[in-house]
Image (tube, rainbow, N blue to C red; front, side, top):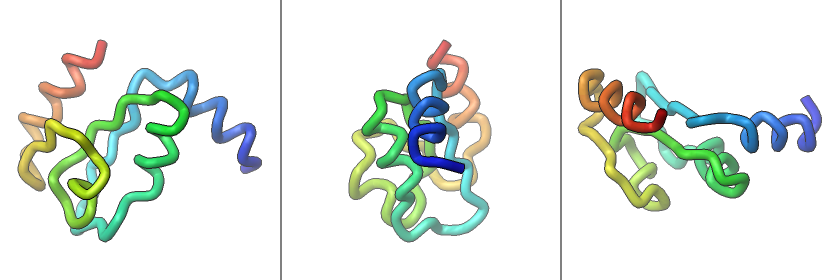
Length: 73
């Protein structure tokens, strides 16, 4: 996929969801999404809290993540 095509997806996204099943060490996808103005919904996982302003539900809290997703639309 070309970078410009990926940028178009981020720009048109209502939200980018990052429900990692493991403790993500950094999460570059989220930073790329923020660069293009997309809302990023993620758990407090690994290094995500280093760049995400929150709220960040506890890792694995599906109910809290789904509430954030509902609030996005």
